[in-house]
Length: 350
Image (cartoon, rainbow, N blue to C red; front, side, top):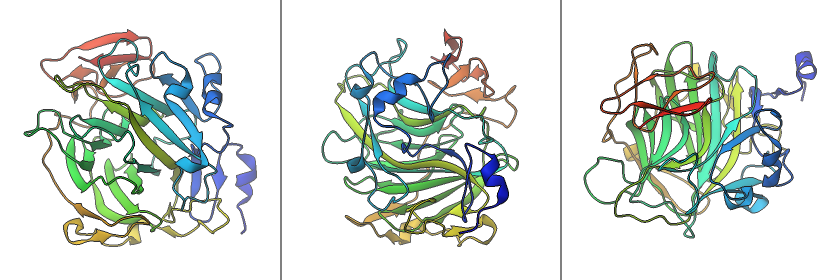
C-alpha cells in the first residue's frame, strides 16, 4: 500500500486507501480502561475525555477486552463495555450517563466526515426497553441513535434501535441481543446534511438513508460515545451494558469494510457518497448478520424539538446541553425548560 507523503507529517492522522482517519477511538492505545483516568482538563491526554460518569471507579462504568469487540472488526484490538448501574449519575443529574468524548484538535466538525461505530448488547444486562436511551449523540442532538421507549410515546416498552435526525426517527430495527450493528454517520457540516450507513455482523456498510437536511452543529468536542438514559417514574434502575467496537472518524472516501482501516484483512474497501448505492428500502430488506437475521423497518414516530441552523434562534430539547465553555449549539431551551448551570463546561435544559 502506498501512503501519501503527508501521512508522515501528521502524528495523529492515519491515512489509508479508503480515507483519512481524523480521530481514532478504537481503544487500541489503551492498556485498560483505567488509562482513561489519566485524562483531566489540565492534562488532556489520550483519545478520550472522560468526565461524564458516576462517582465510582472507572471499571464500574467502562471496561476493555478483545471479547467486547465485533469479531469482524480486525482493525480493533479490543472493544469497550460501557455500563449504567445504580451509581451512574453525573453531576447531580437525574439521568444515568456513561459517556466518552473524543479528545482531539482535528477537524472532525468541518466539511464532510464519517463517524464510525458498532453497537451490540447481549441477553445479560440489556438496555431497558421501557426507557429512552440516547446513544452516540451530539450535544445539539442533530443526529443520534435511540433505543427503548421514547419519552412521551404511547405504550410501555419499545424494543427498537433507531437512528434520528433532530429527534425524528429516520430508520429503526428490532434490537436483537447478540447482533452487531455497524454504523457510519455521513455528516456534511458545510451542506447541513446527514446520511446513514448501516450493516450487521461482518457485512459491508451500505447507504440505508440518503443524506437529509439537519441542523449540523458541533464544536469538535461534543460527540458522546456512550449512553444517556432518561428517567421514568415507576421503572427502577437496572444494570445495563452496551458493547462498542470500531469507533473512529474519517474524511475523504468512506471505509465500508467493517474490518476497518489499518487491518491485515484489507479494510480499505471504500465508497464515495456521490456514487453510493441507492438508499435501501429497509422495510423490504433483511440484513444478514453473523449471529441472527434482524429485519429493518422505517419509522417516523418520535417527537422532535424545534430547531434551525442558527444557534441564536434554535431551541434545545429537554436534557440537551445549552451552554458551557466552547459550546456552539442552541442556548435557548424549549418551553417549559430552562438552561441550568452545572459547571463551566456544561449547562443543561431542565
